[in-house]
Amino acid sequence: MKLSVIIVNYNVRAYLEQCLRTVQEALKGLDGDVFVVDNQSTDGSVEMVRDKFPEVKLIANTENVGFSRANNQAIRASDAEYVVLLNPDTVVGEDVFHKVVAFLDEHPKAGGLGVKMVDGTGTFLPESKRGLPTPAVAFYKIIGLTRLFPHSETFGRYHLGHLPENEKARIEILSGACMFLRKRTLNEVGLLDESFFMYGEDIDLSYRITLGGYENWYFPEARIIHYKGESTKKSSVNYVFVFYNAMAIFAQKHFTRKRMDLLGLLINGSIYLSAAGAIVSRFFKRALLPMLDFVLMFLLAWSFSSWVGAGVAARSPFGMAVVVATLVGLMGLTGAYDRPVRLLNVAKGMVLWFVFFTLRRLAAGMPMELRVDLPAVLLLAAAPLAARLVMHLLRVRGYSLRSIDLKRVLSIGSAEENKHALALLWQTHFGLGRQKQMSLEEGEAPDAAADIRRKIKKHGIDEVVFCAKDLRWGRIIDLMEQLRPTGVMFKIAQPAREFIIGPNSIESINDLYVMERYAVHSSAARRSKRLMDLAIALAMVVALPFVLLIVRDRSGLLHNWWAVVRRRKSWVGYGPMQEGPLKLPVIRDGIVDPTGGNGPRDPLTSHRANVTYAKDYTAWADLRAVLRGLPLLGRA
Image (cartoon, rainbow, N blue to C red; front, side, top):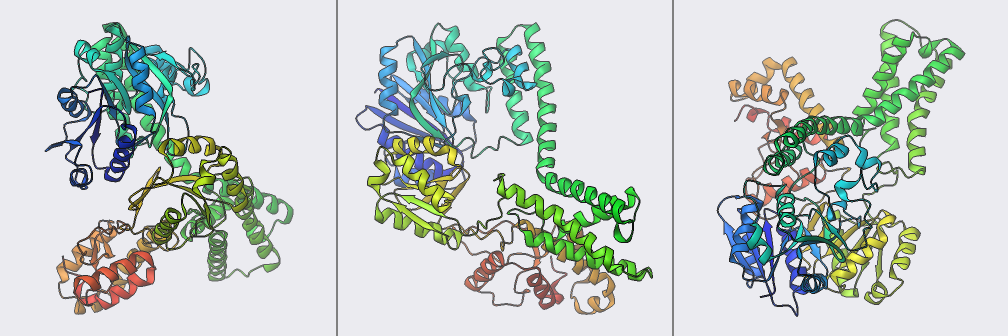
């Protein structure tokens, strides 16, 4: 046996299926086998492998034993000359295994090898080649010098940024996402260290390979797509702790006491800095636009005050700041800071604020000065509107004013496969915008990338879909790399026509993808739902004697009322769910269902009510459901 492909899987069924299809193609003409080690997945991965890939050697663990131990199970069972540890969220080109095996055969000192990896947008992944994380290298990365000087031989050593990404080179550390290993080398230096549950095991093994007198190589002539942690979100604080704990284990194992203490200090500092950075970054991503609006409107109000000195603008700096902050808050309530950006939501916030301001002045017995107040309001409104228009014109990512409900899609493949891919996208998106097609011949042409770029620009394409039944996997990777600067989303329609897979999505006929503007899980809907919950709770306090006469379980009502106020429950949630593969957006448990608890109880009708509620949500739907189900609001 020449090569064993080992894939450790945990709850990424669709990615695993795509990976296995590419592995099958890449193994043609090569004496090899495939192992899948499943760490107690609950998404049907094991059943899928048994049904669709009976030739795969499946090891179904009854517990999650971690990455290292699971790989070792398959390595011990393999009798191949080489093994490759491969993540399930990867796509392998048809020539990858042949090229790598030929290189390893020609270089007997090569104990390990890594390939060129790109992510789901076609962007090169720098972890394809890495240096040993010594205290100095770790320090440069932690304080940001690696990011500032990525190509420096000193400061960029963590990712060996000084080495060209398209040239072969000896390196120190391989990536566990795709790690080719000589079995003889493993017999000499040992398998993966099982004290590493996840992360760090690839660094440890790579280091031991070099200590054993072998070489690690970066081989860019072989390329794969790595969707990069679909089952692990690397921006999470939990990831930070798990990753840096693995670094601490590595330091304790391989460094002297002095170097270990230094690296340990750096690691502890990194944990808190990274966690704090993640929190601050998340805050600024959400608060950037409100802060920008506040500053612009405050400056305009201050300028207007200096010029006119009356009306809404005739206030102290503190009073003016309160007025502007109130305006920003009301704009937030009307969805001015939701994505995608809607100018109408900004206008709604302005109107709501003007009404609030007018009523407040009238209640205080102060007459309106429309000659001054109306121009002031219009001037304030101009600031957020102009800011959004400028960001749209500058094409700032995430601030386009064009509606993306109906996405513009270009599908590349045969006429039959294009038809099926577009039909699946139409159904999961509840419609599409422009639908353009390119034939298989055009997609395989030498100048295909240039032709696709012209179509993207001409038709304003949002997504490019490659039909994998027609296009070679290696060709798809090649086109993604060339088209990366266009900024479009890349997706792959699977040969079996069941899934379309993208960097952050798996679209299936069994998934309910609702348009963000109307969906119950959209930002606007979540806000409206929460406000309606609180409004209903307040109304119940006002009308408590009347409500207690109608509700059957009074003590239960008080318990539910407090749960809603504390955001543990909502007044309205899904009714009984029908068994099946269809997925609805996740919301809080409700006291009553969308019918108010008085509708037909058969599963099909309840299921349809849930789908309609999820797809076409309005706050008034909650109010109607509560009024219908008022006697049931005390039930558990």
